[in-house]
Length: 219
Image (cartoon, rainbow, N blue to C red; front, side):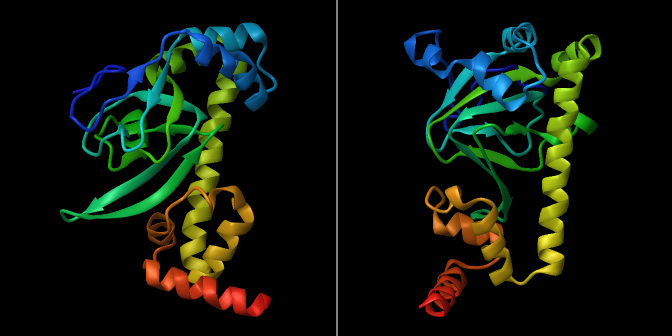
């Protein structure tokens, strides 16, 4: 079944709606949206924001739970989410990280109506603007600039997915680490090594060895 925005289904899934207090006003959501998508007018941004809610996740809270059907579409205002697949009972494989200015959604549900294949977990305290994607699609049909925004978001995600596939086909683990460090240097200090190793497709021990080799080359 589709889960409405903000409804908590499990004990560990507990994100709450933040009232429009000083903390939210400090985020200046209209300016945030226009910074990400400069072609949107103030009226466009306000219309977009009025369609959803600002929500807050504590560390460890889930925005998407594998197996659920959710049409929630989020723009991350602050913080970070980790997307992962669970293998067996206790092993998870990290497939990506989403940070400020990026989006989060269940592609399986949005485009096929199927349950999500992965879980999206907050690695930091995270604020998101959450909308129902079905309502966003309807609005995009009425407003071509918002339609362009939706296309840009989905296109960027497609590019990231293709790049990740290429990384595993064309590059060694060491090369994948170097590329990650070059392309997303600000994340290295924010991500636990076990999550980064999982994202790179190696063990934490292998990651430590790669970092040691690279440091020796620099020295």
